[in-house]
Image (cartoon, rainbow, N blue to C red; front, side):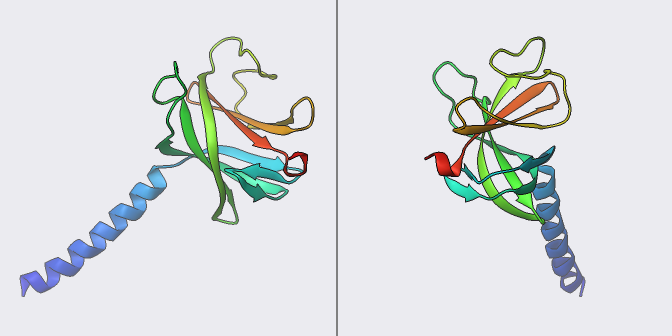
Length: 140
């Protein structure tokens, strides 16, 4: 009798725990507005407003980078992951070389880079600045 009750309860608890860990695994960096078609992770990402989430996944770093230098981010629209791409993680302290804007800004920023071939999304969270480079779709 007890096993008939414990097995369904354990199953429900396992499902709830896996759902909770999936939500805990990603952190919102903020909301951005993409104004032109870009490529994210090699796939088209249309103009629109997206929530940018930082996942707990890491990509292999370039030579000389720390193991946690490249993180996976998700672009979420209407509750669905529209695309995934890489974000370079650099310390946000002091002056940030190669980026415009303040290192301590908490609002994500979207900028067209010189030449019009890339859009850069930058966001700061927990002392780290995350830089995402998205090729403009029609610039290919």
